[in-house]
Length: 147
Image 1 (cartoon, rainbow, N blue to C red):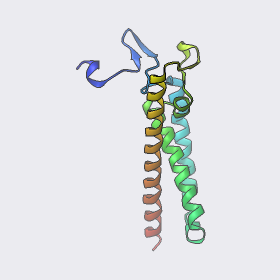
Image 2: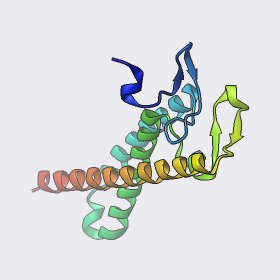
Image 3: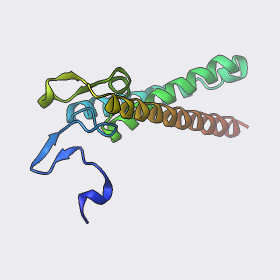
C-alpha cells in the first residue's frame, strides 16, 4: 500500500529514522517519545501505589476520586503523546521540538498552529476520558473485591 493512503507521515521517505515536523501530526522526535513513554510507565506505577489506599474512598470520596482521575489522566496523556509523536504543550504553545529543525522552533504559519492546537485538545480530551474510565473501573473492581 502507498503512504498516501494513510495520510502524512512523520518521516521523510529518503531518510529513514529521521523525524520531521508535520502540522497536527508530529512535533517531537524519538527521544521525546521515549521520555513520554517512561513517564507513562512511572505514572502507572504511581496509579498502582495510589490504588493500594483505595479504602480512603469510603472516608474521603471526593478528594480520593479526584486524585485518582488526575493521576490516571496524566498517565494516559503521557502514553498517548508517546504513541502519537505529539507533545500537547508544544502544540498549545505553537512550537516544535525536533533537533534537525533548530531544536525548539516556533511554528510560524497560523494554519499549522491551529492544526497543532486542535490536535492538542483532542489528545487532552481523550486522555481525560481514558483516565476517568480507568479510574472508575479500578475503583469499582476494588470495592466489589472487598465485599
